Length: 196
Image (cartoon, rainbow, N blue to C red; front, side, top):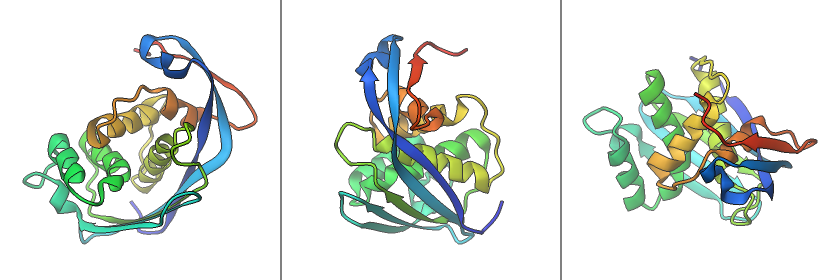
C-alpha cells in the first residue's frame, strides 16, 4: 500500500456489432477508442475522500465526504451504499466509490480514504460507454495501490459489479471487457459466454 499518486487509464468503446447482445451470450465486436479516462488516486488514512472530475463535454465536479458515511456499522453493505449515493447530490461518485467498495468486500483491503482525480475525453451520453473506462481505470488504480493481482476477467467483472450493485445500472459485461482488454488499433471480438 502506498500514499503516492497512482495513475491508470482505460478507453471508451464503439459498438461495431452486437449491441446489447452480451445479455444473450452472443458474439459482439467492439472498437476501443483513442479517447481515454484517466484516474489518479492517492490513499489517505483519515477516512476522508475527495473526488475531482473533469470531462471534455461535462461540468467539473467535486465531492468531499467521510468514507464511514457510506458504510453500515463500519462494514461494507452494498444496498446501504447504493441508497446513500441515490439520496445525495454526489450520486455521480457511486462509479468510483462502487469500485472501492466492491474491492474492499471481495479482497479485504483496509480502505481509509483517498484523493481521486479524474480527467476524461470519452464523450458523455454518446453511446461509447463512458462509465466503463471510469470503472476500469479506478479498479486498475485501486489494484496498484493495494498490490492486488486481478487476473483474466476478474477486474472487468468487479467493475461490472460496481455498476450493477452500487450505481444500480443493470449492464452486461461487454463494456468493461472492451475497456479493459481493448487497444484502439484493433477490433475486439468478445464471445459473451460464461467463463467458469
